Structure formats: structure tokens, C-alpha cells
Length: 272
Ligand code: T3D
Image (tube, rainbow, N blue to C red; front, side):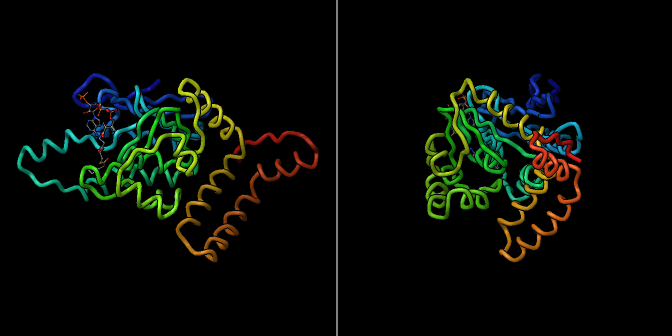
């Protein structure tokens, strides 16, 4: 388990574990439900960049220490701004700290799985929605939370929420900030699967290792395809698919997939 030093505490704010081609990133500020401070955001972005560049890593899992996934921006840090009599300038912070987090996750040609082990609120919910697949523990919940503290959307919420649950539900969830239970979130498409809490990490690792042993180059291209397709018109999406499939068709994994099929055996993928 590798770790980077946090600020103001001896505990690392992000734990990084690498095993079986899977990097598990654990947000580690459990006393404040893993709320984001600047150090945690910086460490998370750096760890995502490292995982993206590391050829030994094929899949990333993000989870939280303790009883929460992430309660969003640390509001204590915002209170300090008001107590100093300063005016918050949130736009620059979003561009400099939250946008890189979301972009790293979306642009990385490797699956990123959110293992939502407890409450995910505000930008913590945004983090979960930015991931490719969300698994959740029974008893966990998601809340947009922003409107409850007088904020608009950030961390990709306005982009991902309507795409996952449709416009009507997205607006209701964003207007109210009401918490959605893991079970309800699964029903409306916000969460992929719900598991008993003590099974969550084993299930997340099982899925991650399965993807890591698959045709990882093709999986990376699929992620690019779908990233592109959700934000463009049909014709552009079809052209982009053709471009990407040209690349996939030249991989050793495609050849192996075809040969394994016709030879009636399990494929042995290499990611090449
Ligand atoms: O500012 C910018 O840069 C713009 C970006 C904004 C992005 C955002 O994320 S804005 C939204 C911020 N998040 C929230 O509004 C959620 C705030 N938290 C809550 O509403 C509740 O804590 C939860 C619903 C998440 C969980 O409730 P509960 O009852 O299970 O726990 P709790 O007792 O409220 O929290 C436990 C502790 O965590 C508590 O500390 P204490 O009293 O034990 O010393 C609480 O203050 C602390 N905590 C929870 N969330 C945050 C937090 N501390 C700082 N910031 C938090 N976001």
C-alpha cells in the first residue's frame, strides 16, 4: 500500500494499492466523510495520472475509507473564507482542481470503477458519476447536495446525471439534493449493482480483475467511443466508431479473439 502525505495530519489523505493489474485508490479522510480538501484532490489527480501511465495497471477502483465514499467539497475550508471576510472564487478552483479529476477519469483508456461504500454527496457524487461503472454497498446513498448549500452543479454533475437517469429525474435530484438509496439508485440507473457491504470490495476487485484480463486495448477504445458518442450527433458517432474499429481490427487481441472463437477455446488476451 503506497501513500502520499496529507496536510495538517500524519495520515495520508489518499491510499494507493496496486495488485493484479488493479490500482485501488482509497479516499482517506474518514473523520469528515472523505470530504475533498486541496491535498486530497491533488493526490487523487496525481494517482489517476500515474495509473493511466502505468502499463502494469489496467483498471482503477476508487473507494472511501470508513463509513462514507465522499461528502464532496470540505465545507469547513469554505467557512474559513467567509470568516476571513473574503469572497469565494469557486470558478477557478473548479477549473484547476475538479475538472482535472473528472477529465482524468473520463479520458483514461482504462476502466474506472467507483466502489461506493457509503454516502456520496456533492462533488463526491460527481466523482462517482464520472466513473465508468458504479458498484454500491447496501446502505449507501447518493445526493447531488449542491442546491442544499446554495450551489449550482459541478464535478460533471450537469453532464452525467441527465445522461444516466434522464432529464426529469436529473432535474428533480439536482433541485432537491435528496439522497437516493443504493437500491433506488440501481433501479433508476445511477448505480450498476448493489451488494452487501461486506462483499463490495471483493465484487469490485472481481470485476476489475476480469476486465484487466480482457482485451484491454479494445476496452480502452470502447471507452473512447462511448465518451465521444454521448456528446455528438449520430453521424459523427458512427464515423468515430469506424475510425476506432480500424485501430481495434489491427490489434493482436482481435486476431486472438477471432482465432479463439473459431477454435472453440478461451481467448488469451495480451492488451496488444
Ligand atoms: O467550494 C467549492 O470549491 C465548490 C465545489 C463544491 C463541491 C461540493 O461538493 S458542494 C457540496 C458539499 N457537500 C455537502 O454539502 C454535503 C455535506 N455533508 C452532509 O450533508 C452530511 O454530512 C452527509 C449527508 C454527507 C452525511 O450526514 P451524516 O449525518 O451521516 O454525517 P454528519 O454527522 O453530517 O458528518 C460526519 C462528520 O463529517 C461531521 O463532523 P463532526 O461533527 O463529526 O466533527 C461533519 O461535519 C463532517 N462532514 C461531512 N461532510 C462534510 C464534513 N466536513 C466538511 N465538509 C463536508 N462536506
